[in-house]
Image (cartoon, rainbow, N blue to C red; front, side):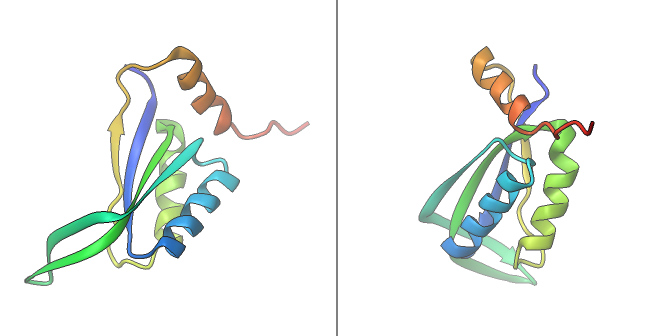
Length: 111
């Protein structure tokens, strides 16, 4: 088991998905964000009604340590009242890739 995680977030538009992805990378909250286009069709219950929508799925790679900041940023940037933010553990992976994730989200040391 590693401290690296994958976070799933759905967005209502490509523009919003790209805005969130870019902000997470710029803030060093994520090492990589994959955007899966509007092939995602979500069916869900919202305020007592069954709804369906085309959405854009973000697959975000980060660390458990950066998750709280990532979640806060998503809430800040997202248009949904209750955005999907689900973290899944990365049990194993390429050592070089896992190291790259950790290195990519490290905050620069102040001198």
